[in-house]
Image (cartoon, rainbow, N blue to C red; front, side, top):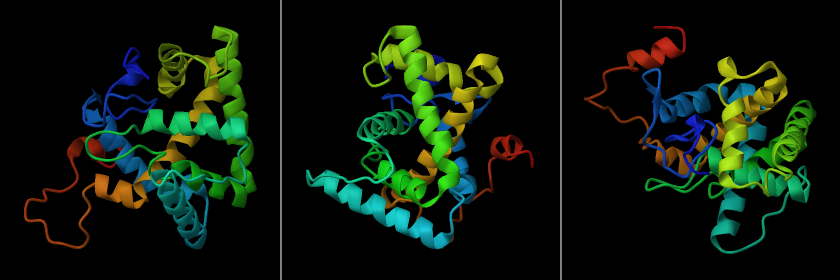
Length: 223
């Protein structure tokens, strides 16, 4: 997706190929927002037990390895069309850049597929949301999301990426995108690639640590 829309800047909420480093809104970068979101939303977005999350992470690792070796990635929940749409959409949310691969490179679609196959509660919102995305694109442009151009995709995603600015008629799309984005962030930043992207080094004393940034605390309502 090109950076034509407002949701197309930096490590975006609606996705972009422009990379993770740029773009801020309200003083907090989208990258920082997504990193905080991944940590906070892993349990709530997936509503999964730690054991199931570990299995989902293994599915993501296997998919990532298969993809890297030119193999085939299998899926249980998504239909072929849904799977192709998910691969495009997660990579618009977390694109490949100079620091790491994309969400698909990290096996995020397989992570989602495993979670959704295990937990019925999340199935309808995601499947219904993917159908909404295709209907919206077809109504506007006469093509499914997959068949739309990058600017056309950006136009639709920009309308649902910012809940406070979204029109009432886009409420279903907003609800879907919020949930889908949480699952994408959870899958990516719980993966080996995502942890390396965060430059996490474990329980090592950092003498330069100055605490959580004030803008992040304010965003979370605790600052």
